[in-house]
Image (cartoon, rainbow over all chains, first blue to last red; front, side):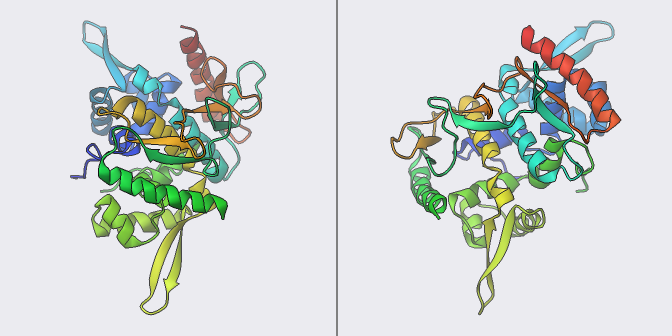
Length: 169
Length: 169
């Protein structure tokens, strides 16, 4: 199926989705964080069709999230390891985990983030690194950066106005 | 195209993706945060085919992220507004924005999060709400929750071991 690319949109969310937005890709990254490196492990854990898994792994390698490494010469065998770019996807996964637990864990929480030492469950929140303030739309807003096109500037001006009004209502 | 559902997986990330993981859905949510409510606005801003937009909007309404509201009687006209569940997706979007800016803003930053009062650009980080510690794999790990099946418990035991070893290497 042909689908429109998000690559040329001047938006970091769209550009990120271009790399991970295909069905299965984010679960493959989750597996990589959980320790899967070999094709068979991904396949068994995800119950995904081999041709689909091949396509998605190749895509994640092309986009720089996974590195393909040979771990055996005869027969040639390869493993897939997170790159720094792939490892830096962790906050997106954890934000998704938090949201999924809040709304879709109908039978109760099955997977949670815990403190390694105390075992206490953790509520991850997004804060401003400078001052620790929770990031919400009462205090923060999207704005054009130095590279923004005229079109992006116009759209974000409208968006900022809307977001401000929402957070006050 | 038929695709496998993630709905029955006992994983909050998979359950979340079941709701937003289709191509376009997350950009539609971005538009909703930016203030789009009407079909035509989504269509114009995203340059998305109308039949696809209809499918995605209906999906997001069914899954409880958007609410469909009638705003005009004659002719009948509807708008789409974020529900609480949809609004709580914001941290995922912002984590994606941060990651996209870090790796894929080849021409420089076009869209950024800023402090409304000072205009200073914000570096959002995920922290433990209890103590403000940055959430990383040196200190935190995924673990089974009370509702975890035996299979999930086994897999997370392996994952925890792997993640710990990685963070020490």
